[in-house]
Image (cartoon, rainbow, N blue to C red; front, top):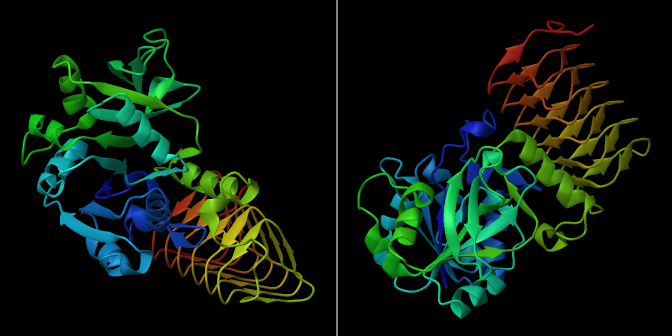
Length: 367
């Protein structure tokens, strides 16, 4: 079976993390997110995938190539301009001659794709949407179905009282290739507002597959941090993780340092005297934590330097950043790639530093 992965977005909601890399390459547990997605697809019988790319596409293709290292065939289609969800799939129509998956390139889930395929075939659907429940559907696309799962109506960001459904579009579809004949070529077009409502009007069978797997939209820094915390603190998603939080043999940890799990250390990390790294936290390869520095509930990418006495809590730090002696970085703060946060500074309240920026020592504090 084949999948089309919509990987062309610029990841604007994740900036500054996506200034230098595309969203599919943002690391989850020290591996590019797309590796997790492709591994999940491969485990459910998908043997090839087409990636629709637009933003920094060379980085994705340089990492994955034609898929030899992951055991599945990969191809890439470059969008010269953003085509929307349906437009991007229409753009690769010639490669789709049998039932196929479509996945938004920012959804992290352990959905049983095989069960969804069986449902699709049993109901003789032309399109099946994965539906997941949320407490407040007002920020999502709600899907109303009958008792068999056949879709009755789509509602985008419904007002209170406008619908009794809390089942939303989860960004994963199974489709028959003939439905693409109803989408225009070479122009921006949406599944959610264009093709799917059109299919309903035509009486073509569109179904919703309701399930309650782990599901997270990685579109924001908060959800990015949440995914890490969830994966490190639960057992239900262990098959995503291939790396053990106890596997620190490739790092140097001073005897007086404390590493209190769940913590994942990348290769070549160094934890200095009296330092504390407390989970749920992830440190990428080559990170250095200085004397008596503390890291709690944070995600550090590769080659980050945390100098002595610095403290990080609930934050995200990009590649090559340097946090000066005694500096503090608080919850929801984000440091982009190669930033330099000078000695004694204190970042709080979701402050952000963009890639390559520097802050002089003791320039910011809170009282």
